[in-house]
Image (cartoon, rainbow, N blue to C red; front, top):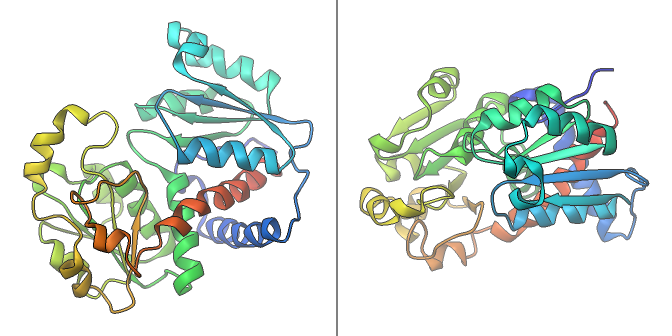
Length: 302
């Protein structure tokens, strides 16, 4: 059987995504019951992280440990990738020593190169283009609180960034309607807009996007790589803060999500993110369970 990689939600079928979410919920219950799998006993995973991380690193390392495996963390200064070694060479070497690679980087092409030459599963832990692991956790969280997301309306408020791109892929894979409110200069990738046209609506009006939505999601306006643009972006995104008025436009039982880190008073108010509709802590925890399910899926099919 050929090796499977997870660089995007589009690497899975709709049914596979649903199976992974269902298994994630099972694994969450098993962990709380004290039942641990030995799936990765005597196996190891290498975490090649070229960008900083809190939730992605901890959730993968904890999940690997709970599976009985070991993780090896490589920051840029820790490997020869940081000194110019070709990704292809690194991929070939790691494939002979480990069982799984998780990569977190900038240009999406770097992860594609890693997967091209690796003979073990490669997981996208974040790239500038998308963040599919986050979406597995987000869909799991929605499912736990509200059931199937198919046919529902979801609002994305703010930057058309990598997380937004993964929400777009989720919309076409799971057949829900995603309304994206973003300033004109910060809309998502044009090619992806075309690919997802049947499931997305673009607007510059946050209230229109949020109207009757079952879920309102956002992200920081100045993510990794855009720190120097913080002041300029704050001006551009004025009016895109998810506040109590915006949440009142959504459905009465609407959930609020944020992939974190969050900046209260910028993209979201404290009243919303710390309020009753917010499920951000479940969302953060579910990174662990969704990624364990993903690793199980990839390792048992490779």
